Image 1 (cartoon, rainbow, N blue to C red):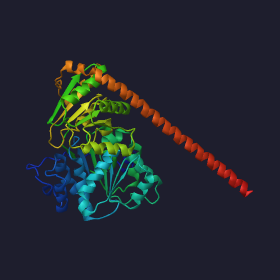
Image 2 (cartoon, one colour; image 1 turned 60 degrees about the horizontal axis):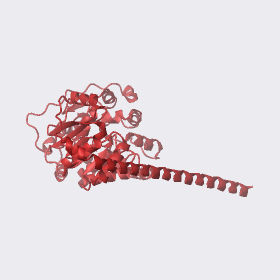
Image 3 (tube, rainbow, N blue to C red; image 1 turned 180 degrees about the horizontal axis):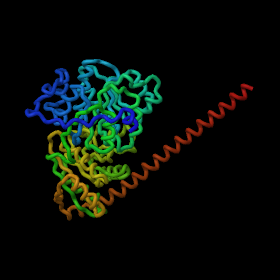
Image 4 (spheres, rainbow, N blue to C red; image 1 turned 60 degrees about the vertical axis):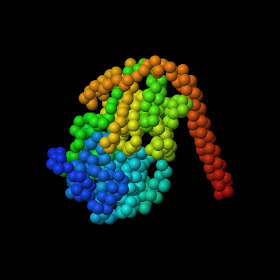
Length: 452
């Protein structure tokens, strides 16, 4: 990394923090100040999680931190509390920057900062794509205490928004660092590292320690302490994991069977493409299920709307691409279904991590067709266990095929209509643009005639 070459390699992190003989029982034991302990209490955070126990005391001592922890482990609290405590001690605008890979995660982190810092008047701003840059520029001009951003849009503002800089920044957090780098944000991260002070505190949180993350750690952190609560890929103990082996052409029927069998639960269903997410949501709606999609081709407002409806339990089924597999804290997911098996085994860990969070139990069911056997074996190898088959009544599944086929037909028609509407809107936009250009040209000609 360019920034690494400038700063030179930092020493390797110290040995992982040893868990104290007597584990702290409260946030106060970790050194968190009273006003923030009260905020934790109001959020229902009674006992610190493992990563919070490891990372908070080190961060409060003013050290750089590398936090390695499985998804759903309370990482946001582990970096938000030390930042807010430092802000209390030395109040300052544009105090901290949190980089995250996805828009939804950015909004969620902002909510936690606002909730934890509400009694001390903390202001945070989210800077992500898909939202008007002018309103973001106005928000940045007000100099919030904390900026939560995706790297691409932040670089846009650093290069184009007059008067905005991060020269006074005291804290940098890179959350889900492995995913930020996997999404090819390396260039943007380099640019950001070049324009922020070297004299700062840096927290790097990641589910996995990849080669790219090690490189970033050497470039951005000074003598960091490594706080690892999970050194190998694993899923939480209270998660019951199953698979079903099925013929590809009956996938929809098996999905409907499972939703009926486990009715009364909340479901997150992962699909591999935006198109299949939309199609499956329409199919399930046609069969009377309260399903809602979440994928990258939806507008930002619609994505947040879907998420909020599911969080508020107005919908019991959320169909999503991997945009929702990491970081999102949706507390009440009972069952995760891998409708399309993930092509990267590590994504399996993040998907099933949406359930069985914060000590609750949960189920995951992975669909394995004749084309997915090798991918499934890789997942079993990664997590180090053989999964049991989910008990099925195949005759009952086959009884559903006729109704499902009719719902598939209607869903295909609806999908086609949606595509045509979208194309028609785009054509209208193009026509309006062309008329606007023509009018400008005509206006210019008129002006010229007057001038002469």
